[in-house]
Length: 594
Ligand code: GDP
Ligand code: MG
Image (cartoon, rainbow, N blue to C red):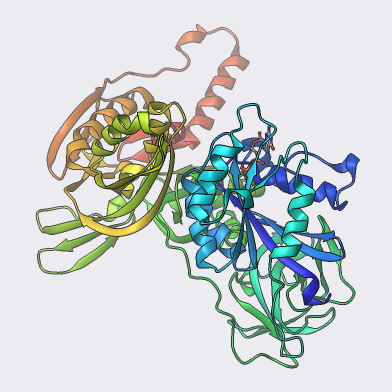
């Protein structure tokens, strides 16, 4: 295709403002999805996306429109998936900034707009959901125009639901988004922006061609690893994969398959070139995202450790933000310490591992990364509470902080400040976006916002507040490690690093929870919460002689056997902590976040 006829754009917005629904209408109007094959949020292809009603992965689709080729990328809106969005932006020249006409600008509207501006994209402001009775298109067109610095009459108005205004929007994309520029006769350079492991076809690599041309049955070179492969298939997504006999040229977005099964051969951010005529310089690639939250992941069945490793390798291909390394826990056995971008990311990774790879997993309580400076000047980076040094030799502990932005109706200012102050927040500033809408900025410890902060915020503002945050360095804090001891023995999986003021609460809660969850043993089991050698909470599990046959009074022998079998089964799923038998379920329940 002649690059002059190509338009690459993405749809960005706050969560739920209708990106995926607008993408649906575009698929329909351009005729790439037949009427009878259409379903809502067509591009949310994963079960987990459909069930939760959220987009997790960006999806690129090629649409024919008015003699042109449009490559449209639908993106996720949640703050944890900003990395997905920023990668998509690099494959585009334009962005549709979508705003719900009944809600107005929200926190991720701003965050995504800034990302698009940084990527130098042409921005098309669009109000969506104008079919809603509660829509206030005039009011929000002004708000949006004020934000972007354009005239309110330049803001397009559409309904992704009814299709109103969508044709005009597509025409506007053709008219205003710049065509891609690249050198057609240069050595080929294509940026890998995503890849996925397919059981039948091996690694499928998604690329945007910047210069030159990539063809079928061509030997290609991955520039960062120097590996060469042959392209077995090359094509475009429209909306299913369609082989392209002529290959991909300047500005085109598509996929390639080499039949390679080794997932490490296709790295997101790498440059693909032609092995016969290799490019000299790689494309810029992506900055690696820094994991913000860590948690231990362990197979419930210890034999599944190798499967877990393989599953992580494969999932990492499709989730470039995922990092992990092996770790061992005295209580849970062999597993991995896994880094995530946030709690939603953590939930999704775990769920995908369980669903897509058939694993059952335990995850330990999530924590952020701490920097500990010892009195002798040594420094430690702690991603696992059990590595937190004990004893009196700690000089300083630093925790990561964020710059958080909250958007809400002005009537909630008081409630929002109260929540933030309760979590050691420091007010940075406040601005009115309009007479009844404020933007409040706080410095907040990451450890305080990743847990129930957002739920609290939503419930105290009747759902009206939205939150965005970005890393903003670190600060010194009064943090301690709370250990949980069973019969005097610390259980590593239950240790947590918490602020001094919250240590007591954590200890008491955990000791109570465990008293409920751990069955009585043949001896008394004290449960203690302690900071170093100082016990801050204590519970007791009283002794009992557990005789499973007591209920059977002689009687039916087969029933007796069944009970004994059952007890044996149960034994297998017990973990020994010292002399104490702790059922696997107790770990799962005690470590669950709710
Ligand atoms: P995304 O998170 O931005 O991808 O948003 P979705 O496309 O998943 O839409 C979120 C919700 O808004 C869904 O319940 C949609 O049915 C609804 N929605 C999206 N666009 C429109 C629209 O134009 N009008 C109305 N009334 N509802 C819409
Ligand atoms: Mg979506």
